[in-house]
Image (cartoon, rainbow, N blue to C red; front, side):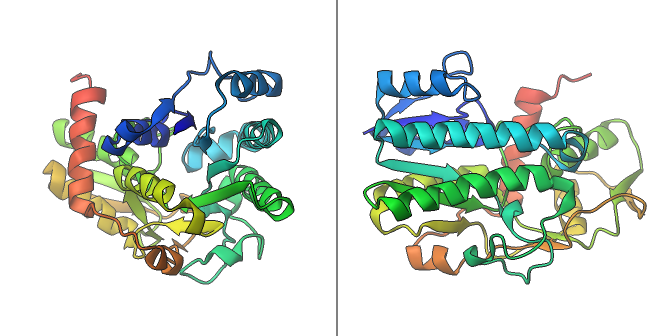
Length: 309
């Protein structure tokens, strides 16, 4: 089975491409130069040339709160164009199976937790990443519409919770919370800084899954694609407070300083916990504990990112 992975140089795509189950498949992992997803003609040409049996769409412009707030036009426009180009081009050249990576930020900011798949477009989005969320909603709905019009085309969406792990971004201007905090606490330790700030009161709750588990789910989904729901949440089914993440990361790194809360900073949604009922019925469960995931991610940071200066 020949599979095209878009965004194969990013965290999600690279982890899927390198996962041990990938050996059973013929993977196409083009660079940006080989496949420019913002150029629909280029996308059509690539698909016609290689004709994959399936597309796993992981590509996108991603970042944390700071990046989303600073670049809303880019996050909305480019992610929408990327999604439309790859989904419509795949449909037009006759690719029957498509696995779209959504995001839990598609859910309304004030929706009751845990967040079930039917809540998409049932309320106002979180303003700090609204552009990105709108683009993800558009791609998810487009997959639904294609399947509704022609059920031969199985275009389905995975909605992962927040992710962290190997190949993550650690620059605080572009990173999500876990990698940003790993870098922050590591630097505090080596610089003997005994106090660190936490944005807000630290009581907001987040669900972060190790990205290797999402790769594991992806191959499970490929084997059971016919019975996979149209949209399916993939996560832990439980969450932790920001304070608990800081403490867990500090324990792994060996940092013994104190944390101070900066109540002037934005915190985003108070909670974002996915409903894993469909996931349980589908027969899959995550494997990596928070401590083990942080250890693996910190090891990657030390070996591949930190320059020792």
